[in-house]
Amino acid sequence: MAAEVKVALVTGVGSGIGRATALRLAADGLHVVALGHRQGSADDAADEIRAAGGSALPLAADVGDADAMREVVQRIDDELGRLDVVVANAGINGVWAPLEQIDPEEWRTTIATNLTGTFLTVRFAVPLLVRRGGAIVVVSSINGTRTFSNSGASAYATSKAGQLAFARMVAVELAPRRIRVNVVCPGAIDTEISDNTEARDTEGLGVRAQYPDGPIPLTGSEPGTPEQVADAIAFLASDSASHVTGAELFVDGGQSLVV
Figure 1 (cartoon, rainbow, N blue to C red):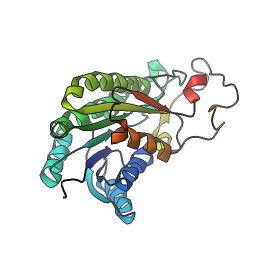
Figure 2: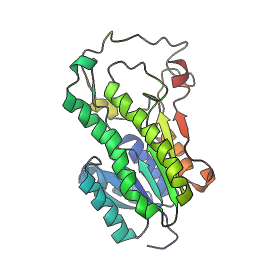
Figure 3: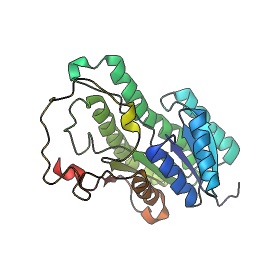
């Protein structure tokens, strides 16, 4: 690979924000390591990138598996020899239920994917990033960072709050090594993640949020798009954000301001 071509690792490329981000960064000229939970989804993302004229390396791993993520980064080093951008996007909604109904294993699964997965992705990427400096973007959520009205989503919200705290901590630690760390916090986005949500007995749970003129000030009931989140990620990953670190960018059309 030509030395001037930057390499970006994007996790969770199977659909939604991860897929849109992989495509956007490839369009910006980066070679994208498209990491999916399954090889098939990674291959699909890579095929779409190549069809649009970009370049990609499709890989599969469970982001919550330390050995698997160590191997992913080792393969990036062996085959590409560099890493400049990391987008820690892979995540699940998990189980949304009253606190006393959440099984400890259900809690563990959500935390393992969303929070531990972010830690492992970043932790193993750092030795490659420090060679030239680079950018890390963590995909969190408005849930657990600015809104707390989705009663039943305690595991999910906790994992997202943890991502924000983690990013702020490592932003300070890694800044002297020329690595920037930022967070995007999407609101309602038109993705498939809700299809994988198990909701149990959440009707009437907690206190219902009252919205002034629809749930999203900018668009009413229309959710944002994965591409809009990808645009924000691309900015934070680029040299245009060269003096931005430790920040969170809310991509929610003002939704979290009225919840």
